[in-house]
Length: 202
Image (cartoon, rainbow, N blue to C red; front, side):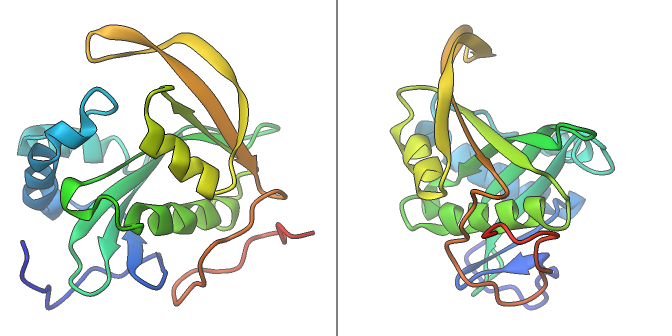
């Protein structure tokens, strides 16, 4: 997996170091290997599919769904998968909102790659997807995740006791959110992404 890719998949958007693209069935081996390597890092904060069968079910649920969309965050120098960002529970109409789920893999953690990838996904969400609001629900002890959304410009909205059942227990979560007019991109785009449908700086 450390060898450079000769024909990386096209990216929906690219930043200085990473690009984002949809999940593919052929990503199963690499993704699941990275998930297994990252058990200690992910701990009780998140669960990623660790078998090919689980990956196909997980990725399949993100393809063609009106309420979910998923993106792999890949390093531009070799095309390797550094992490992922999903937008779940998408509600259109008057709400135009979605909830984020994300994770970095152990080999890429602490290098700012997921932060750059999240920036690209947010721009895509407020641009091509036409969403108005994104939220992230985070367990209070998950300092890395809290730091990630703070850097991305999210603001604290509230506290939700027993919000999600994870790792065998109901877990409290903090709710963080950002809207399109509030958002300030952190990195320049390179290729592949259109401008937002409305200017978030207005």
